[in-house]
Image (cartoon, rainbow, N blue to C red; front, top):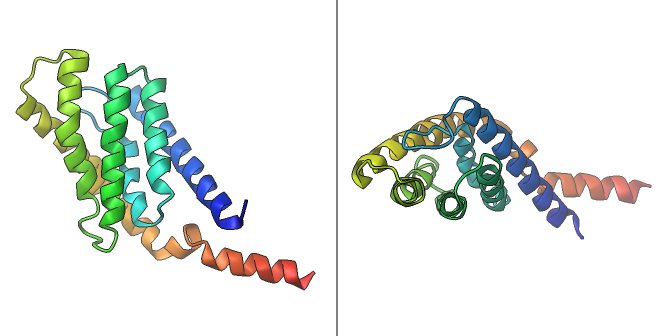
Length: 176
């Protein structure tokens, strides 16, 4: 396996692990499920702006989180799909820094209310749950996510760029 593939897998794994830890932390405050949810981990949906490894990383993290916190099977499936769609949208909008946090908000606001209604039997009306889920996503993706983006942006080449490391690694190997 070459260095770039290994780095991709490592980045995806680290991102997945961070997502799981943040979701379990939010679950401790009863914020990871329900009509009003604020998963801190959803801020990580901004990471596809920096690296494509974040798409599988966040998606796998969401899948594992939903299993670990005891979500219903439809939530495990469709919640993960919503997060995947949001991450792909972020990756596709990576050239538009201020729009890239919007796709996870839209995907979750449109999909999760149906999960809440049909998997958990919530009686709130779908449009109301779209607003509440959307509000939680705005907080986590558009506010916390943008804070994360702004914090990582100055060091993006150090944290996410594999080009510099490959060159450094090749120079070190050839020097021996």
